[in-house]
Image 1 (tube, rainbow, N blue to C red):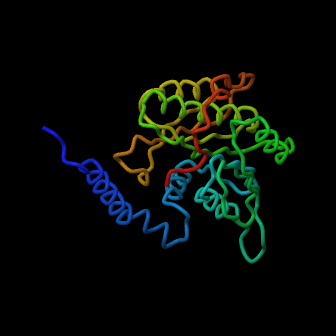
Image 2: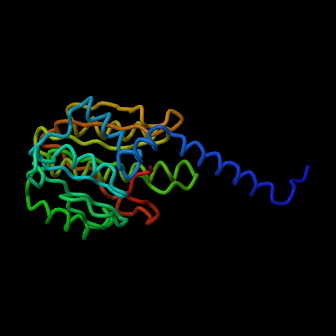
Image 3: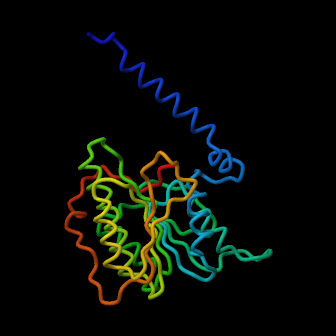
Length: 245
């Protein structure tokens, strides 16, 4: 039976309206609006940190894929000095392909983590200082083609691991977003090769219907080579380095 003209468009519009309605009714969206966070993703990091105590005063933290800035906001709150004294007890360096509105005390670099020039500028900002925590809420633009999307997600995870194992302190940690599905087991295996302790985290703020999950690696293994970046270097320019709210 032939479809009525415009039926597909109407179906998409209904699905879009339904998503907007669910989004606006989401308790974490409401909380984010109430407390001034830039996205509901803030509560994912808050919940993970409450469990794992990742964010500690006096530490250096790198936020990969930071825009729109919700995770950097949480990091800043945790490192803010008590009382009326300005500034942070620690350091936050954030990176994203997209621009990010300034956050007091957060050093922001706009650039593509897949490009050598961006990594060189990020490393110059760190000036050889060891990093205590790397967090990554990066996700690619999804094409709907499972194999291609899995490859893009794996590339971003590999880049995060590669950066972390080269810059983390001996007791440092890496927290990375990934998705269950094709390529997930390979990302887990890469974590196990490079970290002494690997845990899976699925915060309540992450929608139950979503395949999104987080991998936490602690204590990078000494002497481990960095992740091969051959596939990442050849990645297409369709990925984005920002959180999906």
